[in-house]
Amino acid sequence: MTGTLYGLGVGPGDPELVTVKAVRLVRACPVLAYPAPEHGDSLARAIMAPHLPGGQVEIAIRMPLSAARFPAAEVYDAAAAAIGEHLRAGRDVAVLCLGDPLLWGSFIYLLGRLAGRSRVEIVPGVASPMAAASALHLPLAARDDALTILPATLPDARLEQALRDAESVAIIKLGRHFGRVRALLDRLGLGVDARYIEHATMDSQRVLPVRDVDPDRVPYFSLIIVRRGAAVAAGLR
Amino acid sequence: MTGTLYGLGVGPGDPELVTVKAVRLVRACPVLAYPAPEHGDSLARAIMAPHLPGGQVEIAIRMPLSAARFPAAEVYDAAAAAIGEHLRAGRDVAVLCLGDPLLWGSFIYLLGRLAGRSRVEIVPGVASPMAAASALHLPLAARDDALTILPATLPDARLEQALRDAESVAIIKLGRHFGRVRALLDRLGLGVDARYIEHATMDSQRVLPVRDVDPDRVPYFSLIIVRRGAAVAAGLR
Image 1 (cartoon, each protein chain N blue to C red):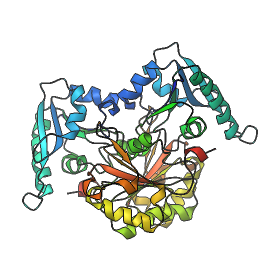
Image 2: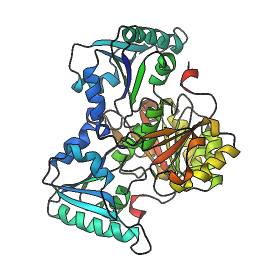
Image 3: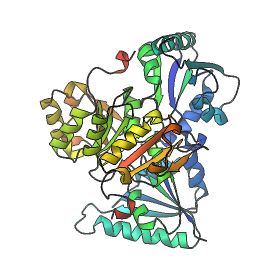
Image 4: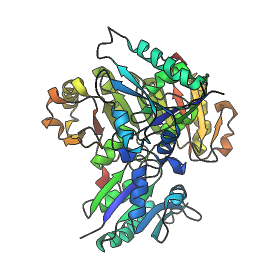
């Protein structure tokens, strides 16, 4: 009888944006696992911290800054092996996932390694584009709108295509790509329709006009929402 | 001193997929409002029911089946007027929103009418494409993938464009459009990559192979996720 692997979305940052279900399940699991930087604290764990009962075994999945030295696949192999040992011993394991587990989440790589070997239950979470829209009071999509979410790592041509085709576009994980994305938006005349937010729903949340953002200080957890045309809240009748 | 207008995402259906924040706020509001059919119960209210303290004033925003007789704009005008009266009297009002308030939610139309007249706080919720992916154990997006979410009401050419451009596409609100969407997927050779689910996370949740779905019995709350190519869980290393 193996344990159950839980992938728990912990939402975008505010510990209150965790679901009732994720709180119940995380409290019942003897083992926790979560992504973490090479040194320092895990954001996913910090979000869930107010809800933890204490006394749980914890596995920090630490991702080195230099993938050359220790590639991601090896990190996930090792984490899956450690988690798999607990599951085989009959212990349930809760993997904490920023935002939603299956939306650009490292849980995907654990699922790929552990699926089929034990029961899996995945609890969806609040994703950052929705959290950002709520903070900005900006409708993401209505009626026949399409919404595209894509990472800023993509080349200009792909971002431009999405901006041309969808009424709403969320460009996530800006970081060092911000300057290039802003230049693209300016070139397309979309700068005025673009809204910038970093660390949505966290204590450190900041909303800035796109033109006022210092491209050298844009964090990884930041995004721009472009709502094409005039279909904003006030106009929706 | 006016009351605060809260837009509370209640998630996709499972009452446990409500956030801790939405539960806290709904309990503190003397007035609730929620979308409802012309006759019968409101799904948004049913999801939140286990968390309600009782004794709250309730405003059911009933949408007639025939928009010809009583257009949606009039329904929202009347609802905004009723809500606005409570806000002006200093009473906080919680509007319950299926999924996320700003993602194809009727809250958008209330926000358009009430913004600027009182304090507004919006609490994002778990959206149905993420809930569906969790139920299906299907990664929605990883690495440089793009995700497009769009309603089945859109014409074939627009759906085809999205299916061609994005690695993951969620086609929502299938209902009577299912047959047309399935024919399009078959024509594009994407039937095999498509996953169908209805009423995700509700007691009535059903997962079926796309080819086995009876197009005459597809509910409004159903969706297809197409994950292009072979980038599924098992392949993600």
